[in-house]
Image (cartoon, rainbow, N blue to C red; front, side):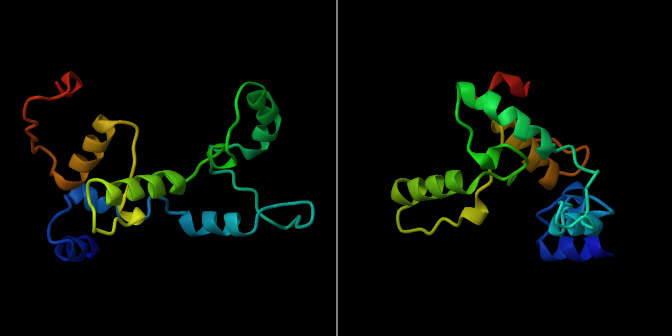
Length: 147
């Protein structure tokens, strides 16, 4: 029922698979967010230690000096961050787009999402808009990896 309402409000632009992606992925998400709001510390021994995350912030205290021997890492890339792209990148790209290819049009950074290559972007896009069993035609010229 909820998917039908969302499908109707999206103008039918999302596939059934895409609609499933709009639901919270984790049944324990609310509890997990509570652990982020009150992490354990020596001053709050009743705080939470989330064990449902692959991110290991504790080891980065050990690894950071080793990395810094060779190169500098901004703190925001040491652990999980905004999977749609970091704000400095989004701001720079939005500014470039408004200055060059979209003059006079406001580019909202919330509308910009970045991924690791065109193949990943197309895969995510088609997963969300195409139903299982549908095909996508990519006209030539194209990248050979799409074969």
